[in-house]
Length: 192
Image (tube, rainbow, N blue to C red; front, side, top):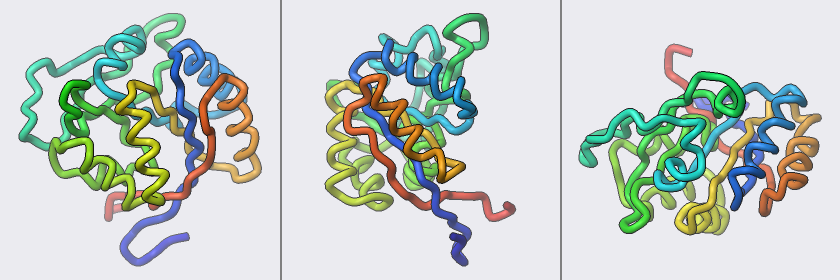
């Protein structure tokens, strides 16, 4: 559905992973089923990315200025094996969580609406508020809590509605907690 403010809606399946091995296994099966890397999004705190996904991502900006607009935090590593399964694309700083460090996300999270809704580095509570402007408040609070607790959220954009249940089933089969589908506005450049 297209509106005059140049937003389409997008459906994304979201799975919460406690174990990066299960995340990788889910990604492998999703890729084998025909899901493209560009359909994946990730939301996690920076320590989790460094500790659990360091073989997939490389940090590119040690000296990030927290007062500036979201900057690239990590880029996907190119190479053999698991590194070739990176989520494709960069992870951007969204804000700080105090003791947990910064929250990072790819531009694909909830149709790009979360990243587009944040003009600078902000507190995680504001990240939760931006998510709540896209999806229901209780869902946004739950997802924010999962990131705060150090879990990894994998978002899978659904391009073919007939495959929605298959994607949710794959996430669930690989131990994603509370795998479900959300609908959100898709942010596009006005030139598109």
